[in-house]
Image (cartoon, rainbow, N blue to C red; front, side):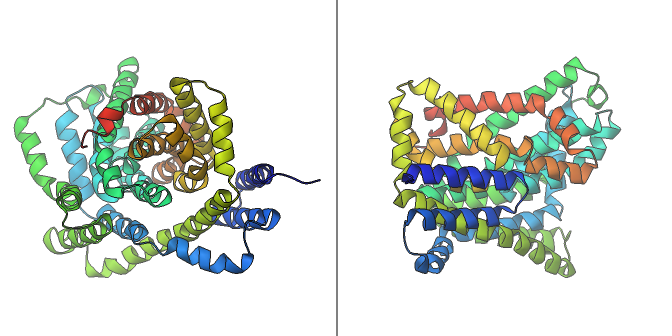
Length: 429
């Protein structure tokens, strides 16, 4: 019995999802799936496999990823993160549930230098979970605040996932960075509203209300000045034309290195080996995932699977609003099963043409897709931020996931706002 290319791709994809569910490492799933697809379909010769894999990583834009990972490692071990959390508390600590909001704003400010959701969650969680518990918050809920706030690490620039999306689709990484600023504010605001409602209904947050002090706020802003410097240097340098996004990543590493090692002296030279080792391990995990994801994407493109799916999708003639709802549902399902970075590489060859067909601008579509996929960071069974929050809090994974439900609802609503507001996302054009 002969199978069409689309049927072969569907069978391989289903088997890949099954392998993920049973716990095989992601890079092995992608490797086996890619090679199976190429072998079964005859997309191209396996003799070119090594050159294809090498070419997928031989990218100037992709070089920004390990550099931003390194910058995040340096910051997470230094003083900048604590000063940014202090700023959040000074600005919103006077509101009911203010310490919870300070956690979210701490994630927002830290996201401007880390580019990683898990680093955001772990770093801010280490600082805030115990403080929140001391102020009367349920510990699992406190951990869920760090987990949901950590999502800002992939929407606020510089975002590693924006880099991956830009490489996968040929979209300007610089434009994606600047387009992520307003959605980042929206997500932070939505999470703060969610926290306020939770604290108003229950008893949490009542004891953390302190009078607002302009002097304390100005003092906190001054202390956090080094944390503001990194995103200003990164975005300012990109849009003034001084350097590319990849060069900006190198500048970010140099900036945080000088600040933490030589100015505030929170990091010692003896710590550098552990910092570089941790950043290398993270990069080493991501590199084969990216390589085999791109190989899988290229095989799908050669077999014209994306075009066939676009034709099927557009044949429904459901209109733009229903199509957006369908895309959100698809992304939420994928986000539950795949880490968003890998999901971008696996599904964009299929989804990107659909976005073009619906009239999305590539930058707007990228922000919408990344924001929606990022909800998967707080949804089982993958939920990387939930694992990070569980690690720093000692609370069970599923208990944190349950406490994150209000944030989940808020994030879904914000994703629809992003989808239907292109002018707000593309304000800089």
